[in-house]
Length: 46
Image (tube, rainbow, N blue to C red; front, side):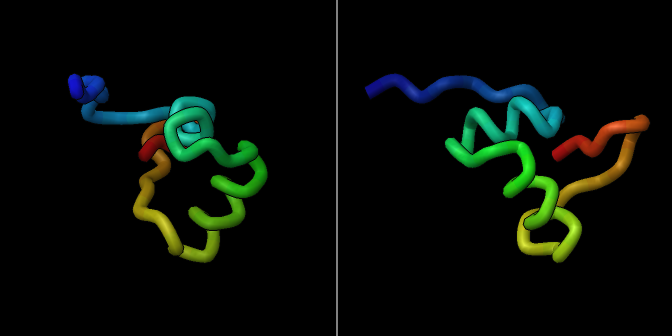
């Protein structure tokens, strides 16, 4: 089984796709520090 190579930084949309969660769920989890993330630009990056 080949594993996909991920970039060092994921956008919210990329994280949503990777985790198979709606964007709003990723945002909510990030706001409650359930998943690690940083605000590098106007949008959150993970």
